Length: 292
Ligand SMILES: *[C@@H]1O[C@H](CO)[C@@H](O)[C@H](O)[C@H]1NC(C)=O
Ligand SMILES: *[C@@H]1O[C@H](CO)[C@@H](O)[C@H](O)[C@H]1NC(C)=O
Ligand SMILES: *[C@@H]1O[C@H](CO)[C@@H](O)[C@H](O)[C@H]1NC(C)=O
Ligand SMILES: *[C@@H]1O[C@H](CO)[C@@H](O)[C@H](O)[C@H]1NC(C)=O
Ligand SMILES: CC(=O)N[C@H]1CO[C@H](CO)[C@@H](O)[C@@H]1O
Image 1 (cartoon, rainbow, N blue to C red):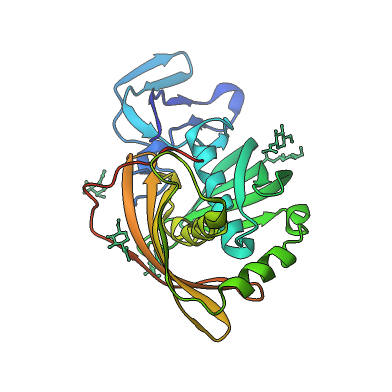
Image 2 (image 1 turned 135 degrees about the vertical axis):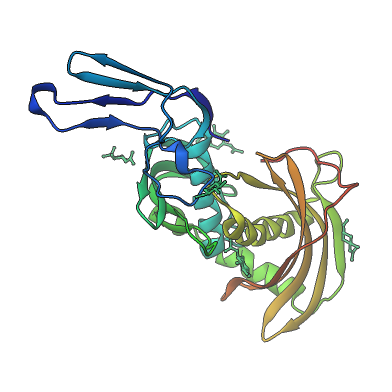
């Protein structure tokens, strides 16, 4: 959620002939579809100081930070997290998983009629190689009638050069002809993942990023909490095929959300999600020990 703050609207009139300066909260539009920059009509108090007319509005509202962002606050962190999911959907594999390491700087702006754009400087980490790289990225959260997913651009060239071909090929060959229920609960209730299952946990992380990218808004922060179970289906068209049950943790609402994902993977084609389905609210799902 945004910051709870007291908003002061200050209108300066005619000072040395300069145009009207309005400092206005961007919050008015957060929960509404009205014009993003509209100035609230309700003003608590009006005072005239010489040529300055000061409108004071005291209102507790959820404010979306605009302009330069505090890199440690939610708005920058949430937008940056979407970049992580985006990179995973494009380049993730059982041996290449991206994580948000740090947000260095960022800003946000309202785009009239189209949404809000975040520009970010972040460090992204590749979890297996433990390499980090500074990347610049842009995230657009669309606004409007049709709820579309966020649009992301990011450049992290160095991390994409990490070569994982050999491990991927070995995993592929090992599982190409099998078909079974692989396991459940990664990590288990002790936070442990069997080393043999680590590539499948990472594959689950990458596949979940498709859901998280699709579902993320300015008001969410998703992590994968657990791979509940994995079923390997018969290989089709040289693609390993999986049915995963995944628990996502939405940090803002503190909800655990249960998804079923059908996807394929091969070293050549990467991860392709065929179907994703949110399952009914999960009552007895416990939050497993945090891994990320
Ligand atoms: C949004 O604005 C409409 C009218 O424009 C109003 O009816 C509605 O209550 C507003 N919603 C919120 C959440 O402020
Ligand atoms: C990102 O970093 C560059 C170089 O330090 C800087 O010029 C740019 O303003 C930064 N962008 C954002 C959005 O903070
Ligand atoms: C990852 O790299 C950092 C330094 O870049 C180091 O401090 C850390 O211990 C490394 N972690 C692992 C798991 O190797
Ligand atoms: C996978 O886990 C979910 C949730 O725990 C459960 O509903 C489902 O029946 C499990 N499927 C298999 C094949 O074990
Ligand atoms: C927010 C968003 O874009 N959600 C989409 C996620 O993907 C499904 C289909 O896979 C769409 O129907 C949703 O609109």
